[in-house]
Image 1 (cartoon, rainbow, N blue to C red):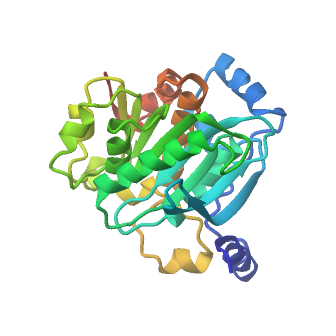
Image 2: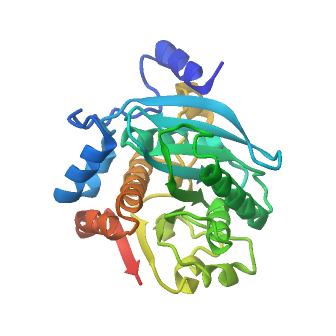
Length: 309
């Protein structure tokens, strides 16, 4: 049974208490991604807006096998927006001992906002620099074969996002020339002594979303901002843990016995901040829209330690 089959079974057995939060849905006023994007750019942007699910339906294709030009196979779960026009693609990479399943809700949420998403499965114990080079090959393949996933994916608007050690892979991919609009790092960590060498080579915009350091700091997490020369922005999320930077869609039974140190509140702020950053990069190729959307959350203390250079 698929993940979503287990979710439906859980809903029947546990009376609806499943890990798919009831957060409301943005009213369906937008027939296309283009009209939604134009409206977002002229309206005042706030992070709270992106806690809501977007106006588009989402089609999910689990365990999709991507075969690159040299025969290399990459497994991915694909989340496609129902919007008819071309839209950006966010590629999400898991961290150490995690899997593509851990980014299910984030990917679903992005697609509801008209940003297609692919959660990919790579070796989850590294090597993380080689995973980064795999991302380079994947992005180049998608640009040369734009209909390999879906004809509505715009191969010129690809964004990389990674959690924990997966964020290191994103940084390596960007340093090694992956043709992407930018990157989003979800509470990044790194095992690489050579990380600073990669970070100094980054040129595309980079948004860093940190967990609350009082709940534990990640190995090398502060290096990402320190060694990136420019084009980087960073905020921390109050009371959010490292694991809150992921968001699997779990059945109620899985939720009870998972033992994960997560809260739905922390996860939802990560989801909203990720969505705003992806929309910002996808719409403008820059971080200004997302940065402005964080302003009220910074005033309220939901976000803190804002840095940008």
